[in-house]
Image (cartoon, rainbow, N blue to C red; front, side):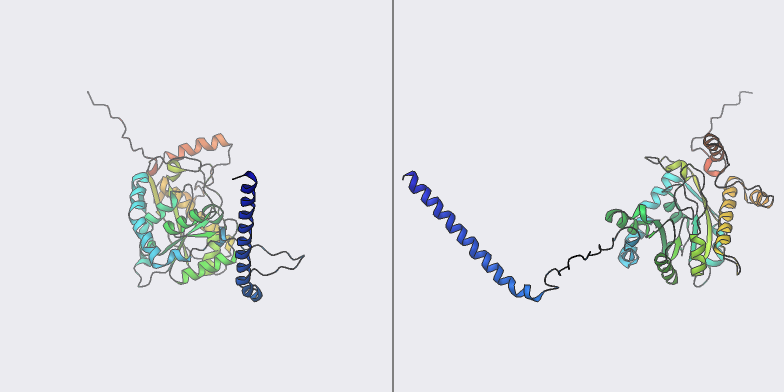
Length: 340
């Protein structure tokens, strides 16, 4: 076969393939023509020139859907996790001691215990497992955790894990929006209690931070009492900036429930909540009587620490951490034999 005949055969094959592709394309166009005449929703709607179509709202952050986390299947899975691996890990890494739970006994023995708002200080990611460990039933069984929307709900995987394991609810840490407040009100009306950190975030240096008014506002809006809490010892175990936890001891102390007065605004009630948590902090370092005597004399140490330079604040913090039950070392002190 000559080269000329071979070239003619190749050209003929290409023409046949082109005609076949054209026939298939015409069939597709004919099949789709009835749908194109139907318009929306069978095809994408036309957008007039000069019109900017708004972007679809994000489903992350404060808009993350967590309603599914309070359905029965998710609750069963969460109960298995919190009462099993999470509880064992918390005991192993933090050795928690719980005090003051008897201050909630009057509410616990009621036929229908009311939902409460728990307000601990915040020094570590370990604070939430510690709170879930320490909060007594029946509130532990129906507990929602207010979590920072800009930290825990920035991705689908991270938000799903937080919602499933902690029953976390995305909250704007800078201000409690109306949407979040309405959602919390509806949840508490359904019997759910709330765990919220009034400081808004973990301590950056080991000392406390000024309280924001979210808990006081939600208490006034929902009618639920606020239970002050103080967690001591979680910072040295897994504080902000630490790459891995370091085993230690912790103490969780509950205070008596607080309600806003008839003529008390949110700012004043928030200050009273902060004072109650500060008092519990002094109680963990001393004892019940000494803490109340210091409060009566205006000598309660501030959660935010002394107004010193950074190195003196660090020095004072190291001295503070040596006090109280959480300051006890796991390693026993060496005792020399009495050789008389």
